[in-house]
Image (tube, rainbow, N blue to C red; front, side, top):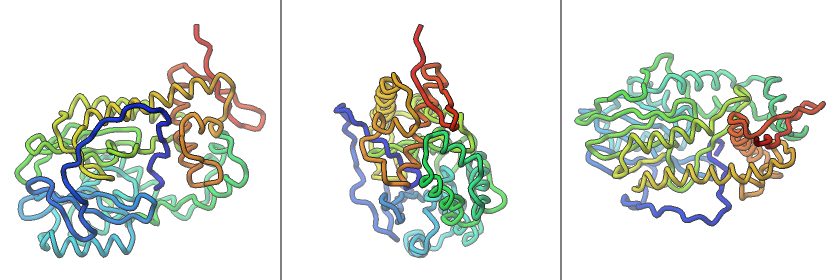
Length: 360
């Protein structure tokens, strides 16, 4: 999908052995109970990554929902089945969204209007989502064109960007005009248990995870996935951002704040045990990529020239992958620039060239 990583580690390192204790995923419209009062729901996605995991937590006589799926007729049909069947028409107390990407927030407005409940998100996720939805139907901005020109894109790729710009809102049902802000570290009472908000950064601006010490559960969204790595990209709105630095710091902080004995409930793939080993593996994978990138910058390179150092799969010829790969490459390049390990030189055509900084 648009927000999954294209990164694949090309080295033969030993990967951690994770446990997957919850069995087969539920079918669309069905649920699996993964802990007392916590239900695993799966919704279809119209992408190569074909499903997203959502969660229902018993909240008194109602249910609190975490994430909602993308706005499609298939998702709406599956939600009607879940609401009338496993959730027993009990109603929703609140809809909590980990972050702003359409596969997580897309049906939030639909559920809230249907159930007359409230939206709970972090502030940056809510506001960024509103901004992106407002771009729907706009022409691609000149800043965005210049951003991709600087990365080395040619005319065909720029034209693809122009035709694709402003599509975010097509996958997202209209959000309510107000929300309840989630804050890092706050404790939420949901039913009989306390859930602590743990915020991460890098994949999105202010991604909320939910940790329940009593049940030993972590709803991780896209912040920690067992089999794939989330996309960490630079976008035209903040070209000098350092999302990879934010991402790696967030993973290290989650390891400090959340014990290793939790069952992790991720947005994609299956629930798993082995949180700390997986966090270490995600960090190590980016460290390996950064080391290959450092070696490649012995000669000046554009953002589109470093794909081979970072990705195992072929990028050329696939415009969709080109967009994701460019964002991730810039995240790695900006990481080195921010730490004085690389410098940028812009040529007469406005293209940025990166090279390793001389070490004293």
